[in-house]
Image 1 (tube, rainbow, N blue to C red):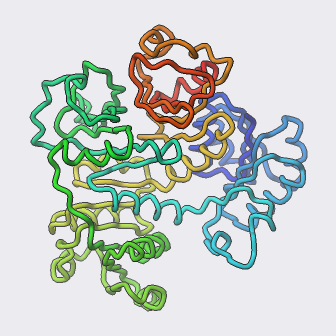
Image 2 (cartoon, rainbow, N blue to C red):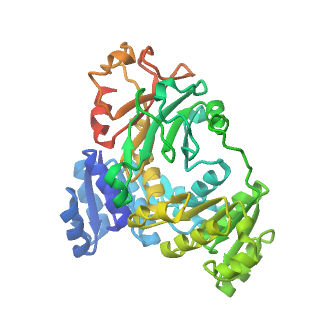
Image 3 (tube, helix red, strand yellow):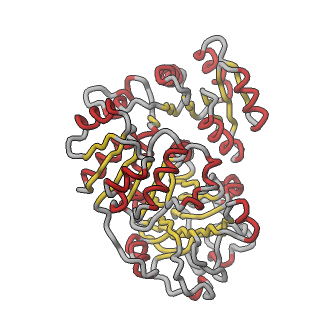
Length: 454
């Protein structure tokens, strides 16, 4: 694919990095030459200075027959205009970054049609939906659906009292319709760097206490994980939100629909007044969410979940740490800077969501939809879970999975197979057929080779 990206920033650079690793052609356009120089010093992509007119650049780039334009600048009006021009120049796919949700929620006007935008990317909406998913999924630090909801992915931490660490995965009597897709753990000296090892597990691997494990399976099997690990189920009834951001407003609306009691703590009095009018059924407290005495007095520790979603990573980390120390069962924070992820284990943060990663996964899933049905990138793109079709030309069709070992790398796993609507968890005796949908776990470096194989 050839992708044109307007706007040189952290999000666009991250997406360009992943696309270039997968051997796609990337053209990044920006009016700041110093930003473009920085990008080319880090990535093997093409850049163009937006010094004349954006429409002329779009017209010139038609020579390479681009598959999509990503309008990711911080100027929303420019993004919309770029998409309109690109579609007029017959660009197949247009994607625009917008922070103003009114374009998405408008009831009288179809802004997708007006501006020829195929897909809006709204960070606040994506992040609030991701946080909501983790609040209502017990003991989960990650959840995704595949095969139209017939297969679920669920990431959770193995309890400290787990007493079967000497038993190989193949010997664990997991519920039928379930498999271990990925393990993330501390290993040896990596603890000193607060880093974790990613393991693509096989039958002779073991699960250890505190491992972060991604399970893949049918919904009933996933739902029985708490019973298997003897983790009591406690439904979420109350949530404290630190910061009255747009993300907090969106999340509150989702929680209210579930009947979950929500409290927002915001230190700006004017913002509190706005929130009170906007969310009449929500408790709004005018205070600093990092004031531990106030948090104690308001009994925030009795809340089931504390969510810190201000626009400052340091505040989010501190607020979640205070909430956990006061007794909150679960803490969730939004973290923009990837460098902070190394210390989150030390402050007992249960889960964090990166707006950049949420947007990246959404954009990549749109770009790859022709060849790949769905894709989820995990741990800063150190692993991928992909849903793709087996073509009639695939060299893997007609061969039992256990015979495919010589064709496939060790950091690759078959998770599930959908054949004529029937879903089965993959095992060595299963045979791939043309038209099957398969769900796999793999290292991103195999992305291009796998597309050729399938």
